[in-house]
View 1: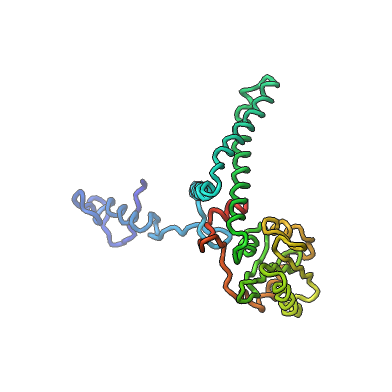
View 2: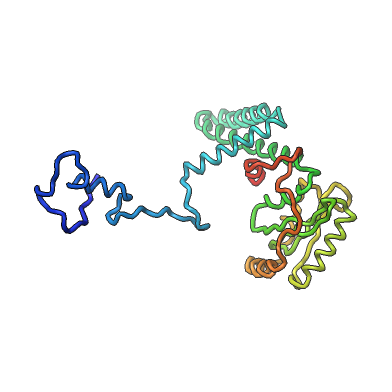
Length: 286
């Protein structure tokens, strides 16, 4: 460790400034201790942490990997409770994928060359199957619960600005508003007859603000003309892109005048009143 120099001009130099060994603050060793206590810099100031684009301190790669591994582990435990066949399905997926790749390697007289590819592809296939099973389990848990559509909409990839519960009633019928490249999407969940009235009222309320912006309405359910919950995100993301990113931002500023939720909507509902965990949300978004 390089010794820091004393910034006190009155401090004596040479051998006269050296005190007895072990006494801090009188000699060069004492100055080094003071410099280390104040952050290690010459000016005694601690280094500020690096900030990311979101203004928050950057997280190291190892920390990110640990967090992701922890979330995947938690998601596995939650999925296994409702899907006991999960470990066997994952094992069979890995073995079959590994065997197929190795068989190709044997036919090409290069089994050892294909070995790492067999392992990597086996792990990738296993992870994909795990994500699908976890997603299916999560949908089964939230289906039919108040706020299920809101939970699905908030997990969509991309620049989707979701306002949950912009309209509703005491029967827990709700309308959620989504702003994106297609325009405005009003998603209703609950009784079909009551929800249609709520959507019509919300359309009249926002028509003066959005102008000629396209407004889509979606009813969540398994009936005719409705979109099943598990297909909701795919249905919304397949809508035509009518607005540019700049137009979405400008429209978002105008929409902010309307406010957000006007009724309490559960965030990530589960049977028994439990809340959706962070790990299940992360797996569903992959």
